[in-house]
Length: 104
Image 1 (cartoon, rainbow, N blue to C red):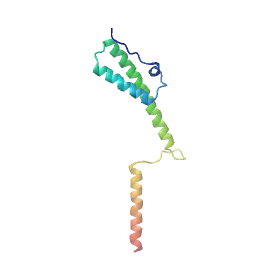
Image 2 (tube, helix red, strand yellow):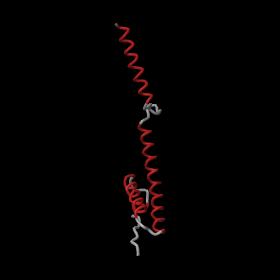
Image 3 (tube, rainbow, N blue to C red):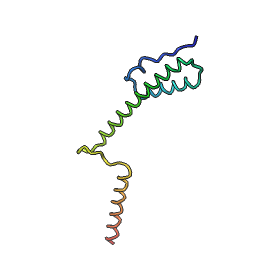
Protein backbone atom coordinates (compact mmCIF):
# COMPACT_ATOMS: atom_id res chain seq x y z
CA UNK A 1 0.00 0.00 0.00
CA UNK A 2 1.49 3.42 -0.97
CA UNK A 3 2.46 5.87 1.71
CA UNK A 4 -0.11 8.66 1.66
CA UNK A 5 1.27 12.08 2.46
CA UNK A 6 -1.59 14.17 3.68
CA UNK A 7 -1.25 17.94 3.55
CA UNK A 8 -0.43 19.43 6.91
CA UNK A 9 -3.01 21.59 8.64
CA UNK A 10 -0.98 24.71 7.96
CA UNK A 11 -1.61 24.50 4.20
CA UNK A 12 -5.34 23.98 4.67
CA UNK A 13 -5.98 27.51 6.00
CA UNK A 14 -4.89 30.89 4.77
CA UNK A 15 -2.60 31.51 7.76
CA UNK A 16 0.40 30.21 5.83
CA UNK A 17 3.13 32.58 4.67
CA UNK A 18 3.81 33.22 1.01
CA UNK A 19 7.22 31.57 1.32
CA UNK A 20 5.82 28.47 3.02
CA UNK A 21 3.09 28.17 0.38
CA UNK A 22 5.65 28.44 -2.42
CA UNK A 23 7.87 25.86 -0.77
CA UNK A 24 4.95 23.43 -0.44
CA UNK A 25 3.93 24.08 -4.06
CA UNK A 26 7.45 23.23 -5.22
CA UNK A 27 7.31 20.00 -3.23
CA UNK A 28 3.92 19.10 -4.70
CA UNK A 29 5.18 19.70 -8.24
CA UNK A 30 8.24 17.56 -7.53
CA UNK A 31 6.10 14.74 -6.08
CA UNK A 32 3.66 14.83 -8.97
CA UNK A 33 6.38 14.87 -11.60
CA UNK A 34 8.86 12.38 -10.21
CA UNK A 35 6.81 9.56 -8.71
CA UNK A 36 4.15 7.15 -9.74
CA UNK A 37 1.38 8.38 -7.51
CA UNK A 38 -2.04 6.80 -7.93
CA UNK A 39 -4.67 8.98 -9.56
CA UNK A 40 -6.45 9.69 -6.28
CA UNK A 41 -3.23 10.98 -4.66
CA UNK A 42 -2.49 13.10 -7.73
CA UNK A 43 -5.92 14.69 -7.38
CA UNK A 44 -5.35 15.40 -3.68
CA UNK A 45 -2.01 17.08 -4.50
CA UNK A 46 -3.60 19.03 -7.34
CA UNK A 47 -6.39 20.31 -5.07
CA UNK A 48 -3.87 21.34 -2.43
CA UNK A 49 -1.79 23.07 -5.09
CA UNK A 50 -4.79 25.04 -6.33
CA UNK A 51 -5.53 26.21 -2.76
CA UNK A 52 -1.89 27.23 -2.31
CA UNK A 53 -1.87 29.17 -5.59
CA UNK A 54 -4.93 31.08 -4.36
CA UNK A 55 -3.17 31.87 -1.08
CA UNK A 56 -0.07 33.06 -2.95
CA UNK A 57 -2.21 35.28 -5.19
CA UNK A 58 -3.89 36.80 -2.11
CA UNK A 59 -0.52 37.48 -0.47
CA UNK A 60 0.86 39.08 -3.65
CA UNK A 61 -2.23 41.26 -4.10
CA UNK A 62 -1.95 42.38 -0.47
CA UNK A 63 1.72 43.23 -0.90
CA UNK A 64 0.97 45.16 -4.08
CA UNK A 65 -1.74 47.18 -2.30
CA UNK A 66 0.63 47.98 0.57
CA UNK A 67 3.34 49.11 -1.86
CA UNK A 68 0.86 51.33 -3.72
CA UNK A 69 -0.33 52.84 -0.43
CA UNK A 70 3.22 53.49 0.75
CA UNK A 71 4.15 55.01 -2.62
CA UNK A 72 1.43 57.66 -2.56
CA UNK A 73 2.21 61.32 -2.09
CA UNK A 74 0.72 63.21 0.89
CA UNK A 75 -2.16 64.28 -1.40
CA UNK A 76 -3.02 60.65 -2.08
CA UNK A 77 -1.79 60.54 -5.65
CA UNK A 78 0.62 57.86 -6.81
CA UNK A 79 4.22 59.03 -6.97
CA UNK A 80 5.68 58.97 -10.46
CA UNK A 81 8.26 56.23 -10.88
CA UNK A 82 10.38 54.76 -13.60
CA UNK A 83 11.06 56.47 -16.94
CA UNK A 84 9.07 59.63 -16.09
CA UNK A 85 11.56 60.49 -13.33
CA UNK A 86 14.48 59.77 -15.64
CA UNK A 87 13.06 62.17 -18.22
CA UNK A 88 12.60 64.87 -15.59
CA UNK A 89 16.18 64.45 -14.37
CA UNK A 90 17.38 64.50 -17.95
CA UNK A 91 15.44 67.75 -18.64
CA UNK A 92 16.84 69.31 -15.47
CA UNK A 93 20.42 68.40 -16.37
CA UNK A 94 19.93 69.77 -19.92
CA UNK A 95 18.56 72.97 -18.41
CA UNK A 96 21.60 73.26 -16.16
CA UNK A 97 23.95 72.63 -19.09
CA UNK A 98 22.19 75.29 -21.16
CA UNK A 99 22.42 77.77 -18.29
CA UNK A 100 26.11 76.99 -17.86
CA UNK A 101 26.72 77.59 -21.54
CA UNK A 102 24.93 80.92 -21.37
CA UNK A 103 27.11 82.00 -18.48
CA UNK A 104 30.27 81.71 -20.56
